[in-house]
Structure formats: structure tokens, C-alpha cells
Image (tube, rainbow, N blue to C red):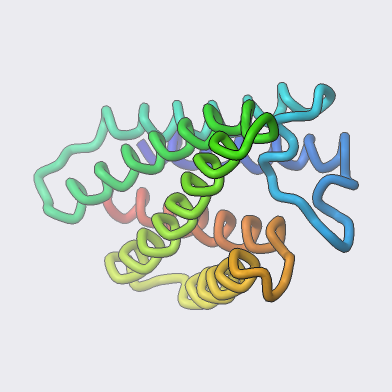
Length: 180
């Protein structure tokens, strides 16, 4: 179980890094875009799809070997299932989000939901494992920046995704080890 959770996050990070290497201008410019922009460019659509699909699939697979005798373990299993579903939904809504406003709005809504979910789940995981306080601080900074980006105060979408997603990944791997 721990191995699948860790692999899910390593695969996600690796394939997103491939996307950045192939097309850095998408996210590394003054008016940076978000990770989803990699899902609509021909040269990055395959690694982007692999990043999200493997994160979803491996997280889901990890739930199958979880023994849910403890309440925290049952909650962690639910956390993995929700994460898997939201990641897959993010992937599914990516491909058409540049075509029209309803698809864009749906994709943005899914993005908001997964951001709030990862933030809340990170706080819960920290509460359960009581480790990685600095990671939670990074998560909080990322969440504040995400809110400021959403409301148009700043535009650092990629940075918020890296901070929130990276902190969430570290806490998820740590929690899987503690709850296995």
C-alpha cells in the first residue's frame, strides 16, 4: 500500500517534470498558466495524461490492500478514493476546457474542489501523524496564494499547484506509512 501511494506521487511529479522540460513557457513565465495547460498541447498531452492517470490508478490500487480496522485507516482509505476520483475528474475535464466557457467553468470548479480537498486532507493527515509541520506551513502558504490567484490579486497558479500538491504528496506518503 505504501509503495503504491509513493509510486503514485513519484509518477505524478516525474511526468509533470517531463512536461515542464518539454514546454517550460507554459508555467514558467510572468503570467503563468496551470498544469492543465499541458493537457491541451500536443507535445505534452501524453506525459500529462500519464501523470494524472498513474496518480489516480496507483492511489486507487493502494486502497485495495488497506486493512480498515482502525477509524483513521478507514478515513485514509476514503481520502485515497476521493483523491483518485478527483484526479481522474481533473484529467477528464482538461481536454475540453479551452473549447468553451461551460467546460472551462467545470474544469475550474474541479480545480477548486481538489485544491480545497488537498488542503483539508493535509491538515487531517498532519493531525493523524503529527509529523512534517513545515510541510503543513508550505501547504498553508500555497492555499493562501491559491485563493489570492483565484480572486485575481496575484497570478501564481503553477506555484500554488506545486506548493499544495507537493505538500499533500509528502503528507500522503507519510500518512500511508503510519496507517499501513
